[in-house]
Image (cartoon, rainbow, N blue to C red; front, side):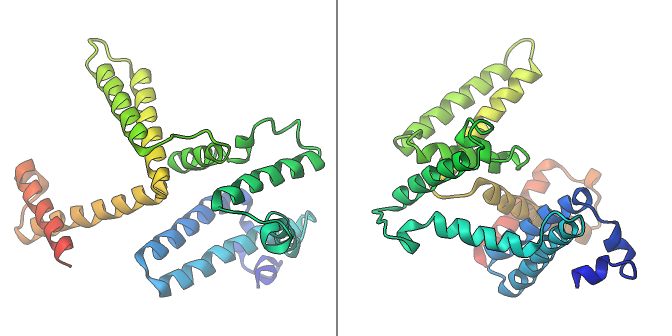
Length: 257
């Protein structure tokens, strides 16, 4: 079907698409899959997985048309890679824990890079984490990889202490007589990075957690809008205190569901 859509007598819109134009759609579809899964909406998840798969096939079709590769090759290669990186399942190796699995995974990847002649290009094990990821997700992936080789906090309390330290530094930047926007941005980044570590320590993916909070904010803000509409009021007619009353009402409704 994808080949048919892209053919000369196919769909003009599909014919015009490139990797650049498809990029935002690929990311959007991936997040819609996450949202449906987190909501437990299985019918929606079924459909969103199909939409995401369609984007993957779209990418593969463009590559095939340019003579680069066929999508079947992508499937074959990932099958071979997963088999190779799970010797405890498909081979004779044994592991005692998930930590052992992850350590083996990084070791096998290092051997793969060396055998492919990529060792000089990839000096760091962190190079495999794309810098194009959303910031929270990139931080999560970076620290997850570092933790696999033992570069990690020893206990959650240490992370809380570091968070308090970073917040104090951020506050100090804000109360300086002459604020330095660049320094403030740096401290905010440090706070977010520590919070990402805290989330990771509790097996919470921070990007998804923030997306869930964004959805919660949308719901509660929409409740305020409905109340104002019911009362025939505009934003200029109400105080922040009144808005907070409606906000708390929205929170109470959510708790009672």
